[in-house]
Length: 169
Image 1: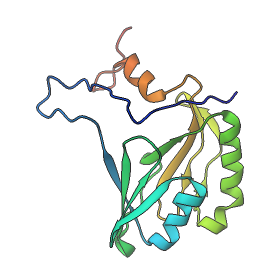
Image 2 (image 1 turned 90 degrees about the vertical axis):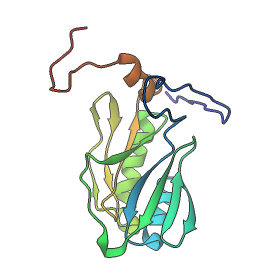
Image 3 (image 1 turned 90 degrees about the horizontal axis):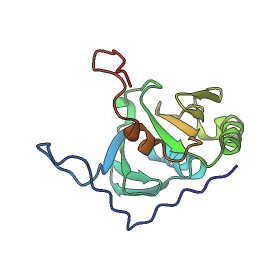
């Protein structure tokens, strides 16, 4: 089953931060590192389907819809490899799209310098796998059958205390 989830540019969501010291409107960006734009950008655009613009000598903005982007900093050999727990999620429309993405990652591994591709599995409420790119950034193509995982996570609320004890529902 293919699910189209449409978002428009005029969507306004009031953040639940009236009691905080800072009251941002939305989270706008994050950062990641790469060695060389010439090697990384084709993977972002041609494989992951992300939009890229190089807005500085050593910085490039990367996005996929919505009002959030990643600033990719070209740092050469100063690059710090990351573990799989530090990854970027990419929502796909179906389990079949995840399976096709997995086949494509394996098929194009050499072309894009993909270091590792994990098996696709059902875990933490999604069907997904992980890709480690040429710069040791990790990507998780995933399908969440219930709609928007972001909304559900926050609608469910806290289930554990900071010390890891379960909160009775």
